[in-house]
Length: 156
Image 1 (cartoon, rainbow, N blue to C red):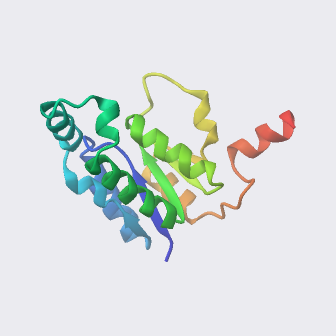
Image 2 (image 1 turned 135 degrees about the horizontal axis):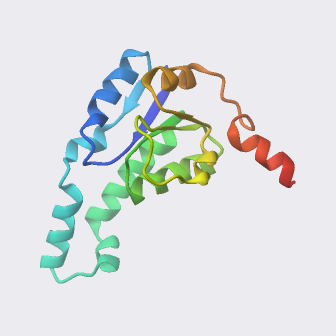
């Protein structure tokens, strides 16, 4: 069974249903990060500021290190990932890290974004519906196949 690391926003209530749907399709899904709740980052910031720490100092603390290593462990063990939009900076950094390892990552955007971004082409595939995402998850996604492979051929 392939493991999917589901990337998204703590504030996206659709994450839990998407995870359930992916599980129902026969995948192991890591979405445990969502259990922290939509205010997790805000609470961490408030706590660290109460201690008189700057953002940079807080990043060196035990809480940040623990959270980072927890997510990284599961990013490393996953076979593929799905970035569910809308999502914030952390989500996009995780997605970029995953793709940078040469592994398949898909973007799920059930609604068209207000602002278009051509760098979405780094993704192995983009889905705008559940059925499209399901097809992508079950498709062969070898290295060098996907939207970016054509681009690289023209540059190199």
